[in-house]
Length: 111
Length: 116
Image (tube, rainbow over all chains, first blue to last red; front, side, top):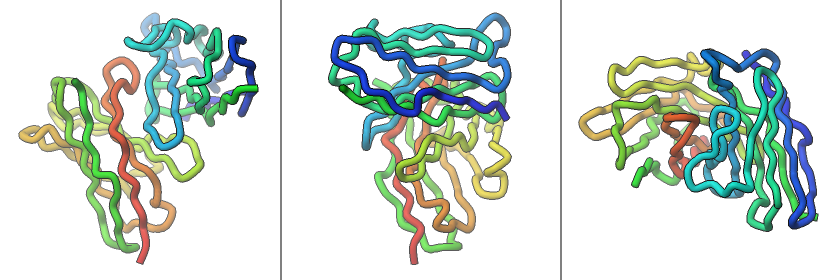
């Protein structure tokens, strides 16, 4: 199984500043010229929401403050600038290989 | 708009099977894989498996091969997941999620409580 390691496990960022979350895969999640890595936001009591698909594509309706980058085994989610509404837990997920796997999550708080 | 409707809660006795439902609307149900995801209280997300409604092709996480059975009813655009012999370890929120690019659409989740 592909193991996804997210870091940090939690971070506190001031309003208007940048938040950067890393996701490292135990093996490449690239196939056919695409990176099958996705990012989700989950708020308490709600299902996850897709933010970024295939590493760098912004899902419809998601603010451009969110961006994704990376390939093969190293990926990053950036939120810039951070707003109060961004307080949540963020997960990476790979769909390149069955079983699909999620990272352990990164909890974002406001400093 | 796309909706995945799940019952909010289910209570099941240990050892009795339970069948969770996920009714889809607002998109072509038979065109996209339907996934099931488990989340235990305060924990992360765990992929159980997926089923393609067009032909019921199923891919299961081997961890759940003796636990979960995925089915669909195309006539009602509903996906089901049956959990066998539930224990307290199966108490969790179970989400269904349709996969178009990533897991684009999610149900609100069913909170399953296994208790006598």
